[in-house]
Image 1 (cartoon, rainbow, N blue to C red):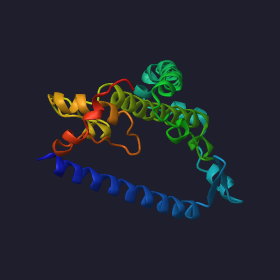
Image 2 (image 1 turned 180 degrees about the horizontal axis):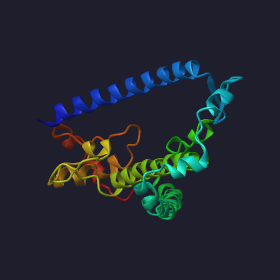
Image 3 (image 1 turned 180 degrees about the vertical axis):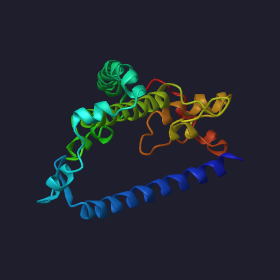
Image 4 (image 1 turned 60 degrees about the vertical axis):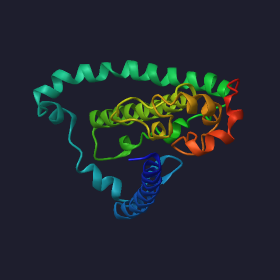
Length: 220
């Protein structure tokens, strides 16, 4: 499979992702109507009577704890201990991008686009379930937020593909320079450090290398 074919597949994937995002937005609107709620300034607001109706499905705390599988109770401390490193990670990558991305002129990642914490507003959840949902929403959001910050950092400092495929790699990797293509790396590094418009980078194709000799200036 040549690079042109990969580029075609990436363009198709990006188009499909946009189509999927549009469809999810449409479906969300349908579900908001079905379950009678709206979202205003980050707050979920249920229509009159719906909140009381949903509270009927809330399980009491005592019953929730007494009927919990033993493995849940035993592993709960391990799960909650992970909150500390996750908070430190959140703070660390936020400080990192505020300092380094400004210096490198890399567009900063918007934290609010990744951290969505709203499931605790559901009336049918008890206090423990709400806490769990806050924890899950925050943690998964921090990981996604960190992933994008790391991907942009990698594009700036080492936009080279690996010698073998890595599962879970950011789509930007597909636009990195080929492993072993020293000429393309030296000619195109400065240009790829300025390319942030999409989720993928685009290194120089062989036919364009001769027309981009100025890219060898790596001072930026």
